[in-house]
Amino acid sequence: MSTELPQSFVKQFEREVHEAYQRQGSKLRGAVRTINNVKGSSVVFQKVGKGTASTKSTHGMVPVMNLSHSSIECELQDFYAGDWVDRFDELKINHDERHVIANAGAYALGRKTDDLIIAALASASSLSVVDGNTGLTRDKVLEAFELLGLSDIPDDGGRFAVIGWKQWSELLKVPEFSSSEFVGSDELPYKGTQAKKWLGTTWIPHSGLPIDGNDIRSCFWFHKTAIGHASGSDVQTDITWHGDRAAHFVNNMMSQGAALVDDSGVVVIGCDETPD
Image 1: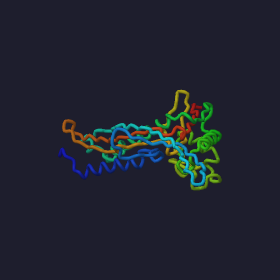
Image 2: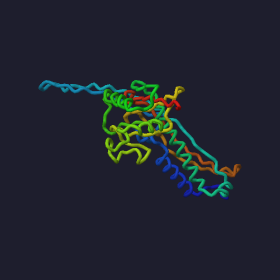
Image 3: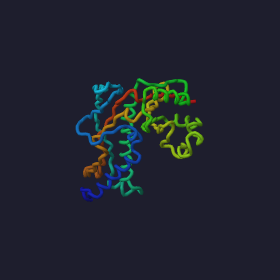
Image 4: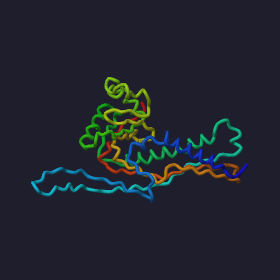
């Protein structure tokens, strides 16, 4: 066969990888502030402090808020996910191997995107709700809700909570979370398990949250502006023919990073997952 792939094949493969990544690759990228098309090895996110309003006398000078400014550097890392597609193996299988490899690569990079964001969330330490003897209870949720309010975290639709599947199951037992009498029929969790709105927050179940040696799972309730995600290059695909292997090598790659911008914008909720 020809050692050169038609451009239409390459373009179709790249499109499938990109669409798969956008569709199911990352669950958390839309929950944080993002800078795309970064040039260089790092990017800086700006953090601005709180301003205070004051009065002034007639013809007096307008008071200056003297906002505090700080910058948080986010370094980009390069990630790769590749695999071989043997020429004659393609003749022996009854499925679209190109589609399978495209999805697998996109999902792997999507999970890595979430890993970066979760690592940034896990670095927060100023606000926490921890009880090593219980899972995610109504009382824990309300305590975390109070911490968000006391920290003046805006309730502007930009709040997100990412929890484990064990905690998602525990919330299903809380009437305020699962009953239409409290949340309305449009927000019932049984309509889908990807996400739902509750307490002005988008709740997202995730399988990749950290758990320690004592079976304490770390869940996070945060505002979108508290975490910065940077992308120097979204998912790209390179396909090359290797005659010595009689196979194509399909390589998916990206350059991304994530950083904690505002420690006071993240509440860490520790939940017990000790097996029954």
